Amino acid sequence: MNIDNDPVPPELCDGDFVLEAGAYEGAWSKKVCEAKNCTVHAYEPASRAYKVAKERTQGCRGLVLHPYGIGKQARTDVLCDRNRDGANTFGWNPENEPRETVQIRDAAEEVTYRGENAIAHLNAEGGEVEILERLLEVGFIQKCKLVLAQWHPYDDALRARIVAITEQMDKTHDLERRGPWVAWVRR
Image 1 (cartoon, one colour):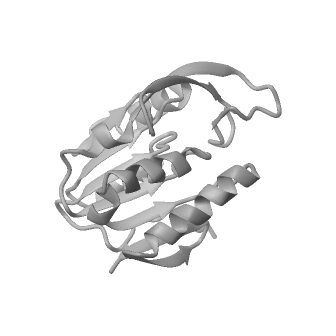
Image 2 (tube, rainbow, N blue to C red):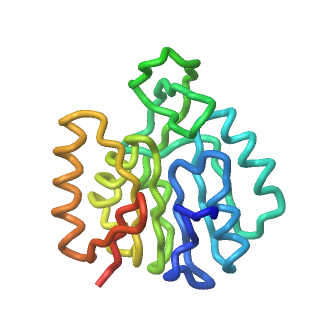
């Protein structure tokens, strides 16, 4: 039995804006585009994964695939590409895997022109923390009817930031678990 741990959320409607950070090889973006007539902006900074995603999602209507990541501010960063399970990481490379310098853009600048019915899907191997912090700072999260995040709490500092994010999200969204995902549904 093949269980889909990353299904298309039932909240997704035609016309929605979908933000995916950590698109990896494009499987989820493709499912979303095939399910509904929506606009998907998917971000994948790892060049190997981006190439696979671009090929896999070719012809997907409504999908814009970006070859860079998003975060708190524009910068370059060093990414470890584990080339096996999607666990590409910044600043954490225990197996001394290949690395590449990648572009990160300010998440706030990437979402400034988006509509009210947004879904955010964040699986950025620890980067989801800074992405959520930035999107909370600029008020984009209030536009999100659904935020899905897969936490990667690599250290105590990240865990403390996750607690702070959860406290902020609880003001406007209800929290639930969906498999490996935390899901916040706007009230």
